[in-house]
Amino acid sequence: MKAMSKFKVLALAMTMASSTIFGLGSMPLCASNITVFEGKEDIGRWQFALATNTVKNGGTFDGSVIQEDGYFYLTYTGDQSDVQLVLQSWSGGAGWETVEPSEEGILDKDTYYAKFDYAAMSTVYGTNFAALDKLYVLSISEPITVSSLVYKDGADAIDSVIKEEQKQDSEEEQKEPVITLVGDVKDLQERHFEATAENVKILGRSYYYKDALWLAESASGVEYTVEGTKASVTILGDNVATTSWAQTSHARVGVL
Image 1 (cartoon, one colour):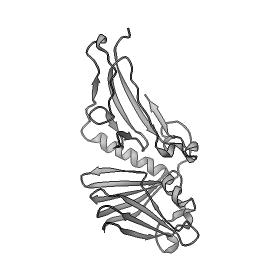
Image 2 (cartoon, rainbow, N blue to C red):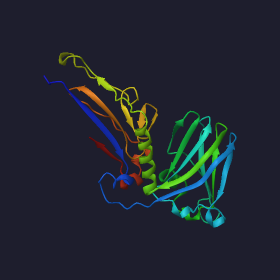
Image 3 (cartoon, rainbow, N blue to C red):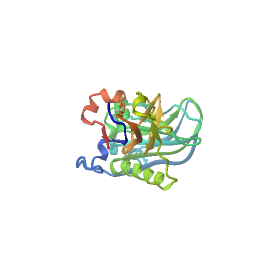
């Protein structure tokens, strides 16, 4: 009979952009943190806002800076809505394309975010972002107030994760949940626990959606302590994991 022991499991998601931080490679990072909009702009249901020209049309955002490790990050208040990013080109690009969020969630009460990464944008628009002429935000299901739209890539994308980690660490330390499986070795039974805040300590920025904890950001993960003989974690990929693009940009997961 196996002896029961107590052990801790720590699983971290590490994207390609975080490889230098974790010593897994030496991929060069390109810093960019561009505020496209900051303020307040109301959008009704099925309406557009933030009609923003790119630099070649008198605006401040240059579409050519969009790279594979970059993404647009939208924040808004009101009710959570089906939001989309609209990319428009009349100078050789893909025309008019709407982009679904690659990630979305809750930042605070009545404050939400949506992330539009390179894969989501290039799937519908292509990769000729230098031909981008204008950006819009579309709210479909609910009226909202847009607070900001920022483009991040490379080192700044990682830096935003680190700052969020430091902010969380400075707050009251979260008590680490302990999962006690049994009281005696002879009573050992297999148990299953969902990755919720009640069962695990959640690290970094994540989002619980459709019975799964999404660890899309670098250095996001979970930690828990188990008393038993064995522990395992189920890790799944979304539909992007099966695309040809993903074959050259694998996600990395560390178990410590």
